[in-house]
Image 1 (cartoon, rainbow, N blue to C red):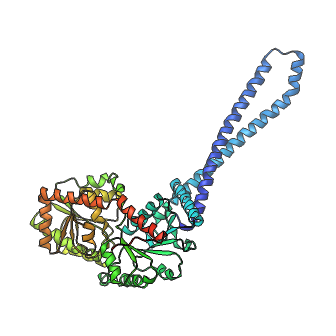
Image 2 (cartoon, rainbow, N blue to C red; image 1 turned 30 degrees about the horizontal axis):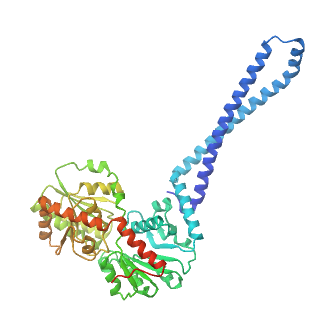
Image 3 (tube, one colour; image 1 turned 90 degrees about the vertical axis):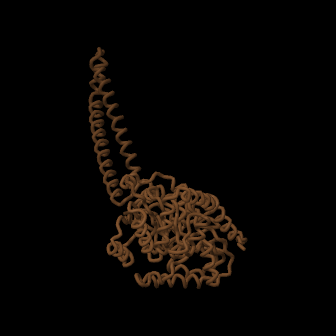
Length: 489
């Protein structure tokens, strides 16, 4: 994997190597040219020798013969020199290619690196910048995807922008889409920060020092009590993160929450600044790519597949999903299967889930682990129903993903879930296993109900379209830039 400290040097090696390859080609071409010249000179000389010459011409030829011999020797030396030089350069270039390949370096990275350099130059030379700041950005994470989508929207509008993060996952670091937080340039009163807090974030302590305007992009923070039995350290960081949200109230000029639930959460914390509800910005066109064929091929049977997607976390209440699925499988459909798609680390909560499956003998439960986007799309394609029993969500992107990919959604009405669902899918007021299993059976068996649910879901996706939400993002950001923020009643 490409090391952070060596990014620039790797790009320089790559580009020097590309120039060297051109030099190799030039040397090879020069060698062929010299070879042709020598052959032409030898042929001309032989033709002269074989022709009928006068005594005076033959005498002149004898005088010139040492010079011809000298030229032949020079030609031979130059030919050998070019051939040797070409071999050396080619061998050197191949060695560099091997090293760069081992480091995970690709030509695409060099292009992206220069794009990042160009973005850095625009940021440094612009009077008005919109800077997104987060503690961690990683590919496939809902908050990270929202940050990337906002950057795309601002780029499309011609607004100078950049992402700065304390931690950048390797894939995004290599893609050159974000800067390390310690490279954050000095900010002025004309600039705007979009701050994405999650868990605890030391950057929050810097807000009182900033002269720029601050937009709080609030995705919510999981209540620590969910993690206290399993991960006390994480619970402590979550509690600190929530306290930081409360403490930063005086320094936030505008709040852009991604659900009404999150807006009310800030109001309950005492926030009185202008606010707007702007959903997570989802580029749905990215979901139109082909799903992983090998995953689909692995499940070509008569089973009906139930999907639960998201990381294995206590607030997701995957144990309630297991209870509902087990009841459904026993009472209604023995030919059913549960996909648990997402990152399930080897931690106390996940071990508890696995022990439950083993102890209660719940069959046909598939843990996919953290997988590629095309594989995620494949599991959506395979699924007949998406189920969510989570008790705390700030938005819950998978609900809309399932709607876009024509999978009916069954979800427990908690936290932001009712807002995200709107009038789509089926909202459950209880998580009692018999009650949930009955609704699972209804939607699996009734084409009339299923089609009605899918129609409502298509309408909800249209309401949350990329262009619609993008306009709301831009209105909010432009309002803050112009000191005339959007105010919702």
